[in-house]
Amino acid sequence: QPHFVESGGGLVQPGESLRLSCAAEGFSLDHYAVAWFRQAPGKEREGVSLMTRSGLTTESADSVKARFTISRDNAKKTVYLEIESLKPAYTAVYFCAVAAGGPEYRPILKPLYFGYWGQGTQVPVAS
Image (cartoon, rainbow, N blue to C red):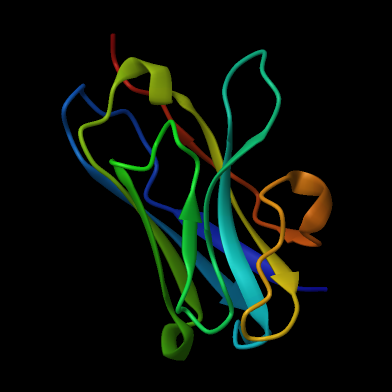
């Protein structure tokens, strides 16, 4: 069973930037598309960013496209999410997730399409 360790969350002030990390333990990321989701209080989990297994294609939700950047370092077995200019509306628990597939497989950015998940890291943005 793939296992992840997420880090980088914590209370931030509006306008600050943040980098979240998701480190895979006991398995390689080489065979997976990777993604980040978030779940705000009282809301459903939503996909924010995705990167294919090859790393050649990324996709982000329209609401975050200008501020969220996903990246991966397969040698370190780690996925990152950089968030610029945080605002209170970004307050949520952020989860990493992976989906097995070919190099250019681009799963739909919905929870159903991802098989393995991190435990989540909280990002409260002060208001």
